[in-house]
Length: 352
Image (tube, rainbow, N blue to C red; front, side, top):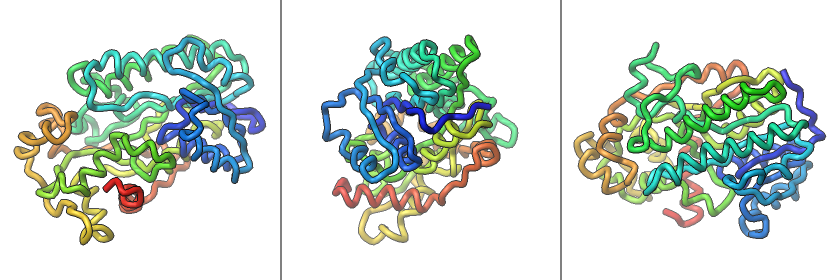
């Protein structure tokens, strides 16, 4: 049970990221001083969106140069902070060398940040952005658990370098964080395990993310012949930022926390767009058969390997978010709101 002093600065790693941007916004609106760790503070154009928010908020922001893989890079930014949010981690499905591009940055980055925490006596709590990917690899695994659903007690045991390497990176990074947390008794660790993150972006550079490429495919004709019933969970980035904030500031926040609003699939997600956008864009009107995705999936998206298609399409994805509702007091917005707001951003920025 830790009380955080709101007059002390708060560190956010990877502050220009999709999730981190909304978290920084929340912290600034709540009056916090944010120590924003970014790769290059001199690239002002990448910080404009955060400066704009800070200018109209009671809080303030200060930038620090910090690279995920440079030893001690976060030490300066962490001084006087009681609360550290570690959100920085790579998310790509199309990688040539998963060990170098995913595993090492995720694990070594986490280790690097937490080694600085160990050397910074002021830090009382760390909130780590992990993922539901640290709980499972493929939707077909849900069926083997009680009520067919994922819970915080479950750990991913199926990801490998060759299959769901991103999931492996999140699993190993989170395990490293718990191992380092248990080897000391000064700072608490609270972990956030989000499902697939959607919602509007604050930073125009973010439209290259995996989340947006899938949204774009829903509206650019890729799924015109039909969308797959690919089991997935969805969380709105605005709700996810709120969950991070509560995980950092509520004294009773603890352990792992599944942050997922909807148990859904690609077809159901696409149908939420039809009332508003159906007459202007070639949105899918029917379900694509599994055999078709098995054939064309790897051509459309390199992440859609045959093994991934067979284990995720046609399988129900289900996670239990009760802990977040009871302990963090989370209320989640409707799926339609998330889908429409995300798609609208792509329309407004002429990405679709």
